[in-house]
Image (cartoon, rainbow, N blue to C red):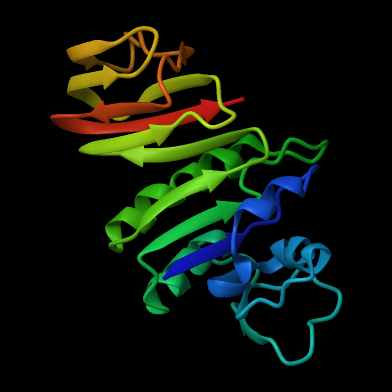
Length: 209
């Protein structure tokens, strides 16, 4: 079962949602993320959070309110845990990278760490935006080129050892990566499928158009 989580970050172009079968998954909105579901005409299974961004809750939709506003965890954190409780084996997170005038880097960076939370709860996860996707790789992954051009890899838990990249312009064979020696930015697809394997550590993979 796929869980679709809507966070409150700005989404300028809704066209890419045509790729996703939102009607046949578990849709969870983290507070203000409900605005995105509303624009798409999607009825979420649940809205979760402190509800400080919703003027009126929709009738007939389950809502889980956490008080007070100065709680320890973010609304996105609660949404990911709720997806795990709904027995999702994978989640896709939308609205995580706020590029608008109200963007806060701490929230964006914290949202990236939701990928690790999902992994710890037994789910695969990725953040999807109209122009990029972000995923966490700890062993092996295949990444489809599609409309993407660039691939960048950052050490999520440094050091990362035994990195092998194939299907890219600049392949690697059992290379190492540390926080102060990042040689894996702005690679490019050389095949329809790029493969990534890691022997030790975790990589944050970012593909962009």
